[in-house]
Length: 432
Image (cartoon, rainbow, N blue to C red):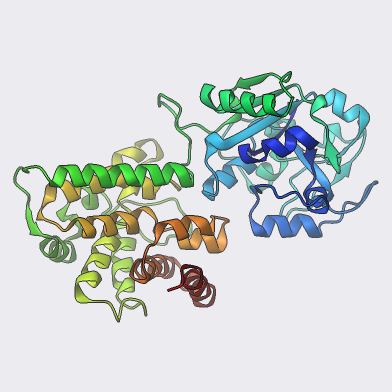
């Protein structure tokens, strides 16, 4: 079997016209939801296919031999789409390979140089061990590229060749069946198959491996509602009379909260980081006070920003999460949203008097501290930021924390020109 995945938003067009190559979609004036980030789209638009019928990679519909494609995980890690919105089309390889197409032994990807084949000649050149793997991480970058070997179909592929459509759950299946019926395309089986998705282990019901924009937004809103409800009720014995008191305690001792204490000495396997999570946290706090956005802030909002900086990585703990990895924190793209239950506890139980707006701002900054960098460098959607920030102040706070986090890891990551350009673009769109 070979597979093609896409956004559920593209199904009405697909039911009408079949699967179309990106260049063919553009030629017909069809606007689809692309899952690829800009760098990948540009690479495919420039990659020349050396075998007939030639053209560029964007002139082909890409399919994968691997049912659980690392390409999907990369897209999910970019947080540009929610996993439950991903739909897979499954095709019998034998039927497709008889009629058309060529294939590669590795992904068409920036920095990759795959070989191209037609017919049966190249089957033995493919790394079937890698292709058939269900591991989330491959032992090497080359193995990951090999697992993403592509079958390329020129211009388009009719759905009549498909064996079935694979969806996230029964509710998604219902939605897809309704779409198919509306387009007069009701004969194709629509089924759930967890083997096609990256699912958080040991959870029920299904939980995506990485939450996308909608999932993050729902978790954020749910936490805000829970904090509002909790702070309206009598509390036990908060240790800090005010946010100012917590702020001072964090400066005095990062371990003053259970959640931040877990960061102290927490080593990481993230090669971009040169220090443990607690040391990185302290560095971010110092760095944030040097940001140009920080200087004109009212002293109270400086305090809010600093508290958020102290808490921005608490979702990387507790240390017990990483017992199976010798206590070393692994890269976790979900760590901002995993901080939300911790924020709920801290802001609901630890502080005697807290303005609701301060709680909201801290939750916003922690949950979305990776958003601006994601938009600039890994394909997150600008629309997510536009929905989130409601004032120039919120944009400045988020920009300051995002930039400080990047600079604390690598001075070259601050990228002031694109970051400032993004801020200016948001301000123009918002008419600020």
